Length: 232
Image (cartoon, rainbow, N blue to C red):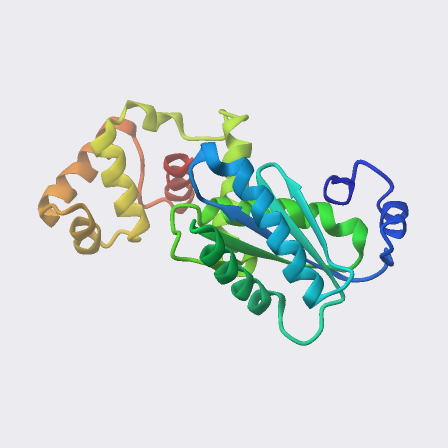
């Protein structure tokens, strides 16, 4: 656990576990999407299977349960990529446990002491794809924008002044309409199609939103702040 949190001397802990602390380490996280009540049992079973599978791939691999997830540290990987290996492991776990399993490949830490930062990346990556169980393995680079935006929104939640509070007067329909309009870069036809309304209906809503809030959608800064505020 100390390797994941950085709460201890990471280099000393790595040596104690028989691993060279200067060795690059690939970080893979696994999430089991079964019923909450079954999670402790599933994690125990998954840890056993993963430990056997990981040691066959790398004799010095480490499997660490933490915060309801399993983390696999693969020192100095060669041959098959961590993503390919993770894909095979997910298939094995799904077949043996009968529950959806997802893996996130956070990347490779240049040395052991950089593992804690990749742990956070891996857990965030799994958060982003939690509602897409068909995605068995996801690399951080595939969802980088979504992960970074979630971190940004978490920061904004603690700093309410960094938002456009003029949008507070909008109701749910108006917020959805403005969000669709902004996401479509002002393409009324495309945005209206996503909302299943007539383009003229959306044009009317957007004009009404601007009148209510004083929002100037010709101003790039106001458009950006409005989009961030709606997402957050």
